[in-house]
Image: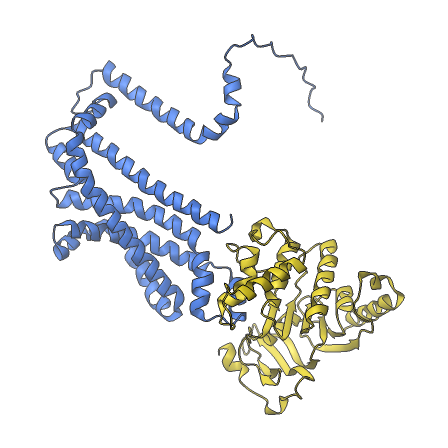
Amino acid sequence: MDPEPVALTPSPAAPGGAFRLVDLLSSPLYERLRPLLLPAAFGGGLLLLWQVLAVAFDYPKVILPAPSDIWAALVTDFGAIWQQTIPTVRDTLAGFLVAALFGVGLASLLGFNRLVRDAVYPLVVIIQLVPKIAWTPLFIVWVGIGWQSRLTIAAFIGFFPIFIAMMAGLESTDRSLVRLSRGLTATPWRTFWLVRFPAAMPYLFSGLKIGITLAVIGVIVAEFISSSEGLGFLILKSAALLRTDLILAAITVLCVIGLGGYGAIHAGEIAVRRWQGE
Amino acid sequence: MSAAAALRIEHPAALPAAGIDYVVVDRLSKVYNEGSRQQVEALAPTTFTVKAGEFVALLGPSGCGKSTLLMMVAGLDAPSRGTISVAGRALTAPRAETGIMFQDPTLLPWKTALDNVLFPFQAADRGAGPKDAATMARAAGLLDQVGLKGFHHHKPRQLSGGMRQRVAICRALVYEPDLLLMDEPFSALDAITRDEMNLVLMKMWEEHHRTALFVTHSIREAVYLADRVLVMSRRPGRIIEDIRIPFSRPRGLEIGETVEFNEICGHLRGKIQHVPH
């Protein structure tokens, strides 16, 4: 059953001082940067391929601009893009904050009171099943076409994942910790605040991460439907003018906004985890 | 029915002479899912008393209802029938003056060892807050006593199983309870750590001298720690033997080598293994 013995041939000695890729790939610095380097290299490769193909086949810029065209649009129209970025970021953040407040608040209320939970939770889950975007026109009718409707939609869409994650966190709290707290004659409120709420933190963060990405979607959709400002508006206007490069430039900015929001929450999560002793 | 409501079926005659009978358990029984087809009688009607300052071990095989019994004395589980009184008062809910140790250390993972010991002061009003200087000094002192000097600011994840259970001992003692309830606190530990923990507990108990009720399925642990051992039968549990352990205190682990110790263990083993079903 033994495998065939393999004759080990000594590897040829490397010429002194010559660069070897193998050395670089086994260096500790590479190991640390690998999670960033690999996707960056792959993404960069795709962009390069896109650039080469677009130039080689001389594709019409209206259909598929090359990455260099998008970059040029970003640089030359920076003022216009920046002007539209501000309202989008503002509405996204405001909507997300409202979503987080309501999501955590309602989940806490439901987690604290069994009766309210059993009455309300199934309804929230059912409402959650409807595609949330479908409500957008209704919100515009209710709160108008200003920033209020954009904030409402962002908050509405962002609310559900935050609420459901917080709920899951509260319900999954280690029962023995709750029993300990009860045994120490803590009131239900103190047990909630000292034990169940902190225990739900990891769940909450996964909900917040989904919530922030959905809040961006909500704002863009609202801007599509009725707005005279924001990146969604810019995208729609650029489409009408056949400025495909500007559309892609706006999408690039949206990508950066999404990354920023996600990154900020991730940083918060790491801080909380460190505090929680992980 | 809530735990508090069920416990309120009080027995006025159960008032003990103060300082003598500290814990009085009277015809206490527990039936799960009563009236349904899944009905399980966990504890047959059980009566016993624990005197003030006495260390009593409840010894029995797994699933004999001894943990259920302890949780009822802690006020965390409602009896089906019967009453419990502690320090002369009928038990209707968890008492602020009872210290509890569970099978698991049950530490809050996001708090340091010291903050876990201080948790009872955070959970309920105990005269002093968790930031009170005297309280903090007492918590720190207890941690030092159980050999956790230098680990006060470690999180539970950074501590070994035995160290975590030491923190749990300190947490149960820090508010100076008059009654200490322990539910197989060392059953998850290896034999060596367990011996060590028995020594720590013995030392702490000899210093603080609280009335104690200790549930275990280890015969040697029961004989080593207790003044009195109550032996419980298999499910539905009931007390089938009540013996006094004659060794003087302080006790060292070496008493485990004596003939007398092993004779007592042999006697108890015979009791447990000849239990009629």
